[in-house]
Length: 131
Picture (cartoon, rainbow, N blue to C red):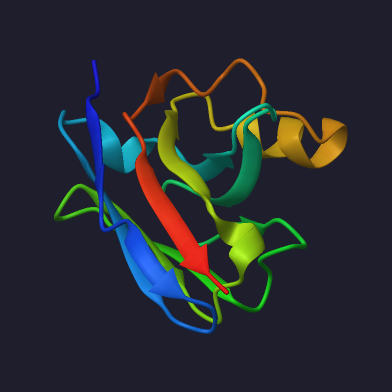
């Protein structure tokens, strides 16, 4: 069992930066792929970025590529999302998730949908970008 707790959200002006953190409990964190997703009211949860268990592979949604960076520190059981050049359209609740199977990213890239292998989710943290 893995528990995920996000932090670092808040209110920021357009063009500003925030760093989200996701602290994980459990000894198996380092073997899981991790991802960040976001959701706004009335819309489906969407993919933002994912990172492989080793940190060697990262993937980004086109909407955040070049502005956001996902990273992880397996010694600290934590995954991060550095968000720069924020835009009002980045406003959402951001969730981190863990994928024990490791195939969640491939499902995302091939189908454009959040697949069923993201077994563990945090409670979310609100990011609001003002114009």
